[in-house]
Each structure stands twice: as structure tokens, then as C-alpha cells.
Image 1 (cartoon, helix red, strand yellow):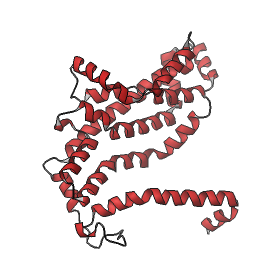
Image 2 (tube, rainbow, N blue to C red):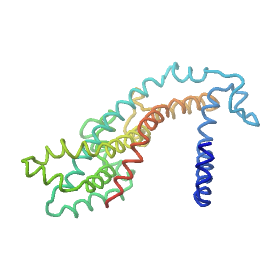
Image 3 (cartoon, one colour):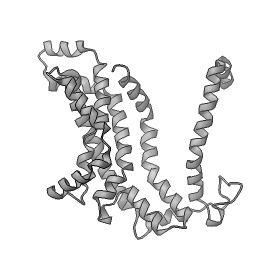
Image 4 (cartoon, one colour):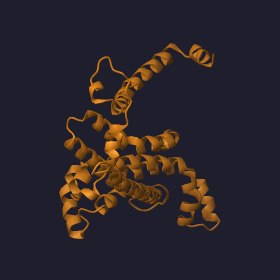
Length: 281
């Protein structure tokens, strides 16, 4: 009854948009459902037509192969979690610091410096591979997790997003704190950060997904297989099991579990944080 009542009050345009968005959502989720379904099928059922979305011979054999093989996904998981969590926490904190400076501290050339900083987003990341390779070799961190963690601590998008959010916080809050004798550090930690929880959570979730799915940097800067992350582990598994489609789907399913958990927990923060950050440019 509730659904019918809501549909009855929708305008024709809104109803059409809702139907289109629902259709697009179904189209986008079909490959994901097929992946999960295939990982639980026997090899003879992979290309069966019509598709059996719920396998008649349900098996966990392929998932066991992924997790208990000679090269277990457990090692790749621990490596990816280490890099993603450290990178996420560091990038969120440093971005908040930089964003506060660009948004709340008035200094000469602030806007010019911010535009210059923002223009670095135009540089393709692939252009920086050679300079970073030389620097990491010189610093002795090539083929270590630091080669992925350190560059991941700095995100231009994070600074931009948080700056937009900080600009939306009324200046009167900071001015009142200044009158009471507070400095920038105290205002930042005691007033601004608590108000920016949705934006911080949004950046943390987005940055975690970037770090977790980072394939190019791991491929270039890691050569020791014991240091491999999940994307490289997945590539290795596919190369070694070129005709094991069930195993590939089981490995791919294992690779996205953390992302599903993170988005399930924080999806409401993503919408709220991006909306608030877009209020003031």
C-alpha cells in the first residue's frame, strides 16, 4: 500500500526518471550477480543457456581454491589492507590540514597557490612513473610498501573537496573562538574537524577504494610477489588459471568483498559529504 501511495503521487516525469534509473541499476548489477553465481557453479554450468542464476549444483570448491592455494589471497589481502588503511588515514588527515589552510587562513597568494596546486590534477599519473621510480630507487624504498603508501598520502581531490566543505562553515564560529583566545590548531581540532565528519568520512571511503584498487602503481613499484596486493594477486591467478572461469569469478568476488563492506557502512556519508562540499565553491 505504501509503495502504491508513493507511486500515485509521483509526477509523470519523475516516474519516468525512476523507471530509467531502476533499469540502469539492474543493468549495472547483472555482471556482479553473474560473477557471484558463476563462482558457485560447476565448470559445465558456466555457459549454460538460459543462465541459471541460482546454481543447481552449488559448490564452494572454487572459493576454497582461491584461499587455500600455494599463493593464497590471504597474503594479498593483508598487504592491501595495510596499504589502504595507512594511506586512507594519512591522506584524510593531511588533506584536512591543507584544506583548512586554503579555506580558513588568509595569507598572500592563497588563491593563486591553490589554483596552482589544483592544476596538478591535469597531469596524467603515468607521466610521473619515471620520476617516482628514480626517487624511490634513490630513497631505497623501491619494491617496498612505502613506495605505494607515501604517494597515496597526498590527494589533490581530497584537499579540494574538504576545502569546499570548510568554506561552507560560517566564519563567525572561528571568529568567536579567536576572541576566546583559541589559535588555528585548537579551532581546527576542536571545532572544524567535528563539524566535517561527513566530508572526512566521504574522503576516507573514496580514498580507501582508490588505494584498494590501485593496480598501476603496484605493478610498477613492486616486484616481490610476497608484497603483491589484491589486484596483482588477481592478475597472477588469472594468468595461471586461464580456463578456470569459475576460479576467476571466485577470485574476483574475493577481491571486492572489502569494497562492498566499506560502501555498505559509509554510503550515507558519501551522499551527505559530497552534497555539503558542493554547497559553496
